[in-house]
Length: 523
Image (cartoon, rainbow, N blue to C red):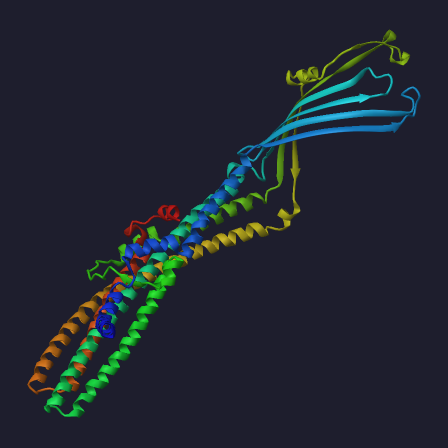
């Protein structure tokens, strides 16, 4: 029994390295293409989520501004009773009581020129215990139309719709600002993605460099063991191995840092963040020559840069404010017109000899309330009035602060637009120069790497026949490692500079087939 356990334990010990390697191979890895990374970021990034809400908020502002053209309905009902002491026994004995019952309805509508049209229907019923009433209770109904139109201040379709136009421009601006945010996020993702690619490839190069140093150290150790090499000769190889191991530690830290940065930008779900999955970029930087022209790039930028579009919208808003505040400097001259048609009805009290002073009621002729309404709607009695009212606010005479402020803000918006154009012009020139410079860097570093490979290969052959030293070979190994790293860095820089130029020209969304509407729907 003990023998079986011992053999089983021995088998487990022998298999353990293979099991560990299998676990390492099955370690969870998050494989991402650049496109996947951008789409996941646009879906999960908090900055995008914040900006996506702005067009929705601005859309409700537009709807709220348009509510001024919705009609206003009004309804009223009043029931009251008045009691007062009687001053004459002829009127009544004791207390005079009069009951009132009123009800009305109205609708008011703002017209595009700034005027207001109001239609109202007012009704009342009066009943009193006072003597000598010829109609009691009495019914009244009035149909009325009122129109008030500003002729100077607040006159005009543009002035009336000013808040709507401003809110519509703000809505457009919010979509443009969202586009700008998306463009910035795309570039940030590209930069982080390619920097992660660089750090991982840099780690591989350093691991290869370490392998070369280790192979040379092992070869030297065998030579020392057989007595063909002095022990002192392996010190340089050992020192170089230790140095390159330290380089690998730094490179591994850079990989982890770039992975963390990309995870944060993407804003991975909590379960993936807790696993701290290793990110494996699936794309590699491509070295393809870009034909760039400053004038063409500048023209494209002027047509596509969201910052310029946003500032142009600001310019329109400030222009609206100038026109509105200029209108508010005018005195208020209003045209008023009214038309009303009253109707009266009630129970007619018949007195002896048609003399109310007799106090003898011989009959009552009923007069229902509908008769008053009928007279009002049939316009039995026509009444109208037309007038002009003039108000001159002294603040518009002695102070023009709002108008002056609006003009200054308009001038400021113009200067901001010109300043942004200058900034874009500089970005385009720098972007084109960066692409061209990095392209030449790649070519130069590629030649340097090829020469470094040939130099190392030749020096290794010389070492085999004793015509070189370990120090020279190790130096050439390090030169080759540095040349590979610099070539890789220049390729990544060339790729990033291309992405930066796309952002500078405002074409990175178009080139990646991403639209603002897709992002809003995706959120």
